[in-house]
Amino acid sequence: MKVFLDDEREPPTDWILVRWPEEAIYLLKSGYVEEISLDHDLGDDSIGTGYDVILWIEEQVALNKMNPPIIKVHSANTPARSKMLAGIKSIYKIAKNN
Image (cartoon, rainbow, N blue to C red; front, side, top):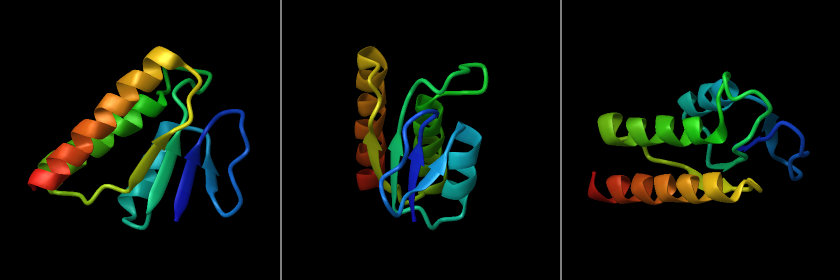
């Protein structure tokens, strides 16, 4: 499945829309997510951001040898986008060394 995390945008055709990080993580736990696209700012940072999903994936890859999905970022927040892309780079480096 393909998962699209965003609070405002509509997902591409054949993607599952989720609005909150916990929903994305729930689907990731199923093991069936092949691709995920993340926004950073979701309207309420106290509930989480797209970066929280990156951190969760990174932890799972490092500790549980999870095979990460294809991860994309579609956030317009430039500083957050850079941080998220650095996290993705780390995820793929860890996965390569597992």
